[in-house]
Length: 187
Image (cartoon, rainbow, N blue to C red; front, side, top):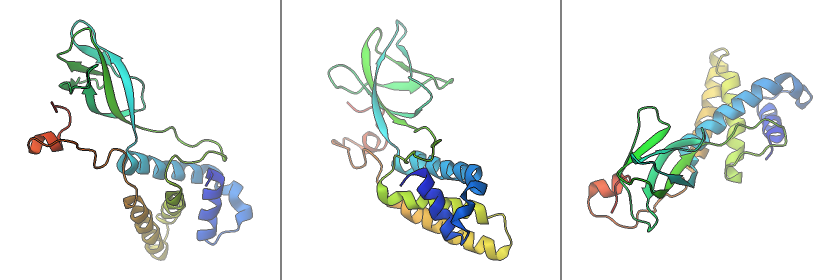
């Protein structure tokens, strides 16, 4: 579904006239992007691999604002590399000096701006964004509207729980509890 179709679905669910879509355009776009952000950050958690270069101190700058979390760092042979994120959140520190490494990172997607933009979510999760719009729209109303808003919020989260994050179930070896629960140091 495109952003325009998501906004139109929200209007229909709210029993509003679809001709009034222009009245709600900006606020519905903002609400859709709020729901989209929750879906990407908390449920989909998409991953990308970046090539990074460490300096003489073993520090490397992480690429761009789209990186939400560094999942793992490996050397050229694919072995895990210990790393820690520095306090500024823009660099990581490793014991590997002057080396080319690969960093697997959870990333964020840009918000939807145009009516033709489609959320980068599974297609069956697109209607959940309309539910989130309805929830936000009704949540500031009277008690009856707030009750209805709760229905839409529950529907949104039910559809979000069906999304499987990228990399789910990808643990390939298990030495101890920490090797499974903390992938920053797996050798």
